[in-house]
Amino acid sequence: MVMWVFGYGSLMSKPGFHFDDKLVGFIKGHRRVFELACIDHRGTPEFPARSCTLIEEEGALCWGTAFCVNGGPEKEKLVIEYLEKRECEYDTKSYIDFYTEEEPSKPALTGVLVFTTTPNKVTNKYFLGPAPLEVMASQIAKAVGPCGTNCEYLFRLENEMDNIGHTEKKVIELANEVRRVLGGV
Image (cartoon, rainbow, N blue to C red; front, side, top):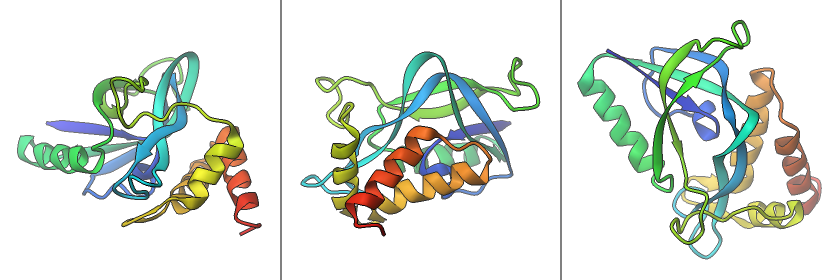
């Protein structure tokens, strides 16, 4: 049995689990946003980090990396348990189609696991919602948790998007604004 997991944030550069293969590609109908609070990795309850989640949007694409976990139900169970702990702020697990640049109209993979969040501040205490660029940059510049700074999370994502050849304007704009807040660091 084979399981695939889609990474669109920190999983792209630091999956934290053994994988057998990976593919660069995208999912359809979702866009990446920094609207999820992280209070245990790169932030605290007092200064939550802003981490990525996906928002459904018709016509949108979200580039990332799909990781293959091969080894049967026991190995899959261990990876899912690890991810459920790591991705604890995400309240939804979905199975999606994954596409590659070579075949953009036909799924390369189906049933790829992705963690997302319900975009509702009432039912999901971790959903921060949208904010102006300057506000998000200020929050990201201040947030620090046991796993490091929120800035590092953002800058790694920016770098990883560049590495896979699919930079994202909103990620670059946010990273540049954080650099401005930090004084050009």
